[in-house]
Amino acid sequence: MTTNTTTHLGHLPTPFYYYDAELLEQTLAAAAAAARPGNYRIHYALKANANPGILRAICRHGFGADCVSGNEVAHAIRNGIAPSRVVYAGVGKSDREIALALREDIYCLNCESLPELEVIQQIAREQGKIARVALRVIPNVDAHTHRYITTGTEENKFGFTLDTLPRAISYCREASALQLIGLHFHIGSQITDMGAFRTLCERVNTIQADLQAQGITFPYLNLGGGLGIDYEHPDLHPIPDFERYFATFREHLRPLPGQEVHFELGRSLVAQCGRLITRVLYVKKGKNKDFVIVDAGMNDLLRPALYQARHHIENLTSNGPLSRYDVVGPICESSDSFGQDILLPATSRGDLIAIRSCGAYGEAMASRYNLRDLIQGYFSDALPISH
Image (cartoon, rainbow, N blue to C red; front, side, top):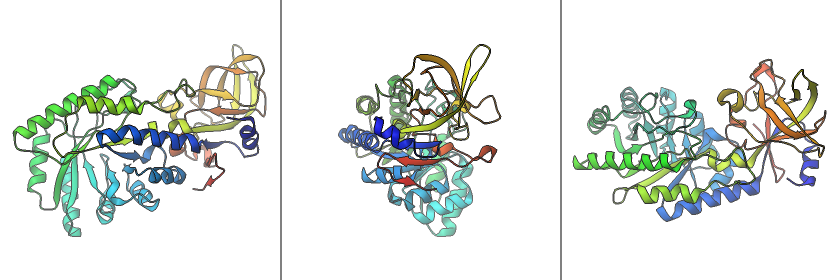
């Protein structure tokens, strides 16, 4: 970030999210290029960040949308993503949300239980439509990530186990208003070990081979997302290694002839382009440590409190000698902390602090807890984004 940019940001009321539009474009282009040799199709996971400016960039690069609520489906379509490129997952789709997805004629509903299939069948019949569905399968792959974002083992709430999959397939084949088009997998988030994805490919190959031996094949295969980023060193790795990620699937996945392979990337596409910009309110001397108290709170960035996540933190306006601080917010909870024992230049009231790698699950998870104002987002090309 240049001095001129920092000066410009200093005139905006804090806290706010700042998005590097150039880095966002570079990241999306890198993902698209890496996916091209495998003819892979990318759906952007809106849950990472549904800011309209982000979605405009997603549209420019021809990506679809991965949605997990009816409002996300409507938001994606409203912001230019064609319904034919929208997929909708989630264990608890309401009747209203299912009806919306069917009315919009989205590409596919990724389904996770037999009761859900029964409800989709009923609503599709009422609308006189055929619902395209895929079955989310639990491959029992441990992604070795935070337990809150691990989704690929049998102890999670998501998807069909291998022993319940045959019944689900049979139900879909007999249902008059369902068209079973494929299988869906997702093993978790913030995964940086390609071995987990290699294991996923091996499980998918086995599952598809077993089904093919029974005469069961599908035109659609969805491998989810989950690629992580470097939170500790965002400047060293501003763009994730998409080439290595997709090369893992090209090398180890054996799709069926003519089968389309889809992915649902979120964090890896947008996280590094975002910063939370906040201002120092006070520096408090403690008995054994010093506290930098900023005007952003856990309502603005929930990840550290919810996941014990670590973000790189910078002082944008000080060049003083280095000291260690706990960086905390104003919320009346001890969990309202962005980092402990953080090395920063000597910090004082009024300094601008940047919390890095916040383009994913930052603005999207913000709330008005303590009746604080809902945080705003701005792009580097100076386009404010309204809510």
